[in-house]
Every structure is written in C-alpha cells, then in structure tokens.
Length: 566
Image (cartoon, rainbow, N blue to C red; front, side, top):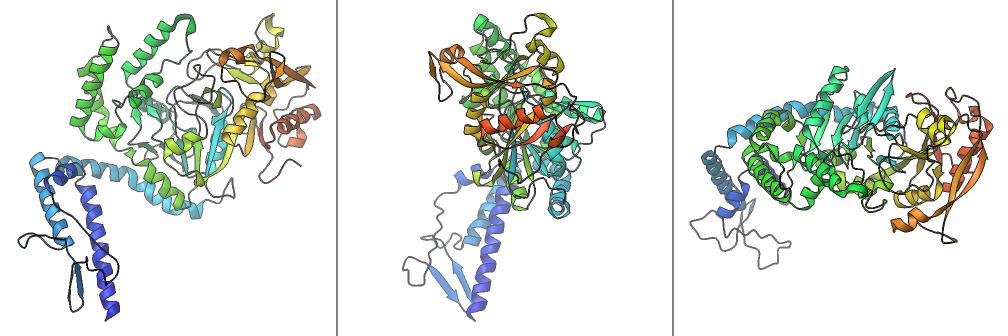
C-alpha cells in the first residue's frame, strides 16, 4: 500500500513538472503578463510527516498537497492552480494574437534543428576518428597578435569533432583555409563548417553583422559547401548594425595620429551598445514588434551621440524583416545545446578569434580588440563550466606578426630592399590580413611575450606554424628577454611607454636551406630546424605538438598525443 502511494505521488510530481515546462515553453511571450495578473499564489512543501505547517489531506491512497490559506471558492491543489494559470495565459494569448505566429516559427525551427538533434544521438558512438583521448571541450587560441594560423589547425582537428564553435569577437577575425587548391575565407563562421558532419555554433559572446554572416553562408554554398541545418546562432549574441561600422570609422578618424588600427567592422561600437545595455540580441528578431521598438530607440540614441550620422531606419527595418525567418530558424539557446552535447559525449572544439595580445584586459591596451580572445572567453562566450575544458592549444608562428598600431618589440623594419629579413618574412609568408588586406608587420619570435600568453591561457600544447617561412635564412634570432632601463623585466609591462622602450635580448640559432614542405615526421626536418623547434619548446615549457611546414591542409607535422618534454 505504501509503495502504491509513493508511485502515485511520484507520478503526480512528474505530471506537475511536465506541465510547468510546457507552460513556460508554449506561453513564453505572455508568461510575464499572466504572472503579474495572478497574485497571492504561494506554494509550500515540507519534508516529514510531523511538520505542523504542512497542509495535506489523505484519502485512501491519495496524497494531495494544497496551497496555504486559499479561500474555499478558489482552486486548492497545485494541479488546480496550474490549470487555472494555463487557462488565463491562453486567454491572454488569444487576445494578443501571438499563438499563431509562435507556432509557425516553432515549426520551422523544429524542421531545421531536429536533424541536428537526431545526428547528435548517434555521433558519439559512430565517431571513432578521435584526436584526444580525454573527454571535454578542446580550445584553439591565438598566442600572439593574431593571424597565427588557428584556422588551419581547427580545420584539421574538426574532422573528428561533432561541434565547432566561435565564442568571441566578430567579423574582424579572419581565417584562410586551403583545401585541394581551393581557398576558403572565414570571418564569422568556424572553419569547422568544412567538415560535413560537424555542427557549427556561434556563441553568445560573438557580435554578428547579419548581412556579412549571410553573405559568408552564401559564398560557401557557391563553393559547394553544404551547411544546411549545421549552423546555429545563440539567441543571446548581440547584433552589429551598419551604423556601428560607420561609427567605428568616425571614431578612428577622430583619433588622427593616435589611431588604434581598428578593422572598422563595427565590433567596438557593438560591444559598447551591449555594455551600455541598449544593444539588440539575435533572439530579439523572434518578436518583431519588440525588435522594431528597440531598434528605433538604439538608432535615436546613436544619432544623438554622433551628430551628422544618418541612418535610414525604415530601410534597415525593411531589410531585417526580410531576413528574420532565415535567421530565426538558426537561432537557438546555444548554452543548453552545447552543454547537452557535452553530456551526450560529443566532442566539442572551440575556435578562438584574434589573440591573447589583443585581449581587452591582457593585451597591449588600448591597441587591442573589444573582447577577450583568451581562455576566459570560452566560459563566458559559450556558457560552459571550466571543469569541461580539456585541451588548450596555443597557436604561434615561428616568427611574429602584427596588424595595426601598437608596440612590437621584435619588429623588423622592412628597409634595405628584398634582402631585408622583414621583407623576406612578409613576402614568403604572404603576410596580408584576411579581413582587411593590410600588410602585416613582421619580426622575430618573442619568447617573453609567449611566456606571458602561456601563463594566462595554460596551454597544454603548442601549434607552431609557418616554420617553412624561415627556410633560407643564414641565422635565426629568438627574442629571449626584455630589459628596461638596464634591468631585466620579469613580467609583461602594463604601461605601453615602458613596453615600447624595452630592449630585447636575442639568442642566435643557425638556419637551414633545405625544403621542408614534404616533411611528414619531426625527424624528417633538417637538424637545425629541429634544434629551433626544441629550443622554443624548452623556453616555453610547453610541448610543441604540431609544426606547420607549408600552407596546405596536409603540410603539417603532428608529433602525436601523450609525449612529454623528456
């Protein structure tokens, strides 16, 4: 008899939970209105049969918990109260006329998302081509000032991952991937989209310029990359508008000689809107009236802040209304999706954008980006626990480059014609920005800077790219220490004046002449190339697992997992 009572009690609890979930999901648009209309509803439950505050009635094998102090003419039980709420919410929705639209959007999204969910249930058992034996979320980050070649490693690794994600930045980032002679350029999308079995997630920490994003998707389609149903956008990600880009350019021009070197993609102004709490999120498009109201308010505030700025509000609204259905079917709660994928045993790879030295907190401020492209962005930009992070792979060139303004201690000024080492690195390495086309500044590998990056991110392995670019140099220098006013610096200076005045102490290693582009194993490299890699590894104290020997997808040495510094 006791077991029967317990089972019936449990069934009622499950039924109650199910009704709560259904209520919140089905009536999300008017739940707040309904909640404010229903007052005096207080639920109470206690554990233990001896508690005098518990108001229960027992009839044979039933045990129904009631609300305290409810008048006799009102619903008494929890189930009755929930049914009453549901009835009132339905009445409100009928009045507001929101049910039909929400059902239509939900049906379209289910058609788009359902294949992903079905695929996720079978991936973990069928995917045997694994890169890591440790379960968790693996991360690829830039260790310098960006443009290190993160996308190439992500492209290689993503072939064995179920989910690839971006977590910070926007279209100011750029990756170029070469596959079978084809060049693919990415700005917002994770380059893992080239894996037809991978789902690509754009997390809540990213700011998205929808015209650029949709154009990127269309370009992939034109190159026969089928991304249908494999791209998800966070409903919490903020939007970059055209006027954000205009504001970016205006602000940069006003700085004159003190310009930051921004890409003028509107990233900074979009994050500024987010922090000012008048930004607009991707999920807002799911309620057009709400989106329109917030958009008009944001435009008014922006025009007021920048006199002379013109925004064709009606034309912009017309555009966003025309694309909202296309965007809405891709829009999901990526926090829930990613965590569910993790708990279902799926392999997740995070593709970092920009790099540590451009981090708004840790980089060469103010010559930085507007987000945190270091390890912290994985947690805040995707909504996952630090306990779920496994491999942290730092990507670094065998030399160093930087785009835009700001101090660069090991920079080689390209003077003296084609024989100049700075010119050699820029020409052979094709050092021109993917996003802006700007020529990159080049210099020797900066060990103190990389030690700082390792300290912040906790890299578990290093991806050393473009070793082949150093081929042909008689000698190669490594910047191994900073000196300021005659004293060695133990850490990275926060003051840019001190940093720009710091002297670099170099260590000189012999170069090599042999072509290394066909090397498949570390032992195939020329002796001096091996010595260079091992010396960098020794100075950083982190294993160098991958070594890039050419621009192609297969032109990379993987020294394997599980080895150490011995």
